[in-house]
Length: 269
Image (tube, rainbow, N blue to C red):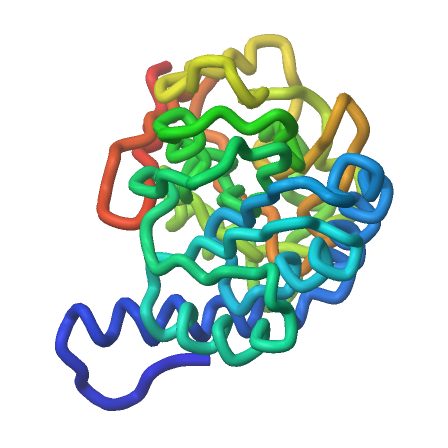
């Protein structure tokens, strides 16, 4: 979904985020995986104080209310989505919508459970870093881990009549999401990993020496307590990211920007 008419920058950003969340909710596999994660921790949610960080339209806040949470803070900084969440969550008196960035939120109670979906397609390119700047300490974070995998593959296994070898060569140095479909071979080696409470790796070199192939695929995995919750390709919300190989060592950096992090990618040798 794209906005077709001109809007001022702030309005466009808010509307664009709203449309993005509609697309996220259309990812039935991702939504089901999160609901199953919450239900598996119903014992930790029942009669407890919970927070949904970046609640969007409040889907998971509603689920925590159904599971018996004593209090749920649905925290959302986008005013359009916060307005929708208030409407959607009106039937749950224990749910309070808070229109703030999660880093600015200071709850009135100790927080037992924090639920979030701050993963970018490249792991750190959205809002995961915000969880390192909280003004409160949750007892449990759902999910609490993730990884970005990097695989070296033969381009001939993916090229077709549209994305040809000639077209792929013109994409050197460019990270392209959704260029090819997942085949199941894209989860070979962890390039980046994240665990709640540990420092963020904002710069990472990837050494490909000794690995055969002329195409790189990057794929996100969301995990909790070491168990996979969902993966790129299986959940439509996260596409695989592709680039033609142009060397043996590449570097990824994440640069803070409004609303997340920009990705810098370059070949070193």
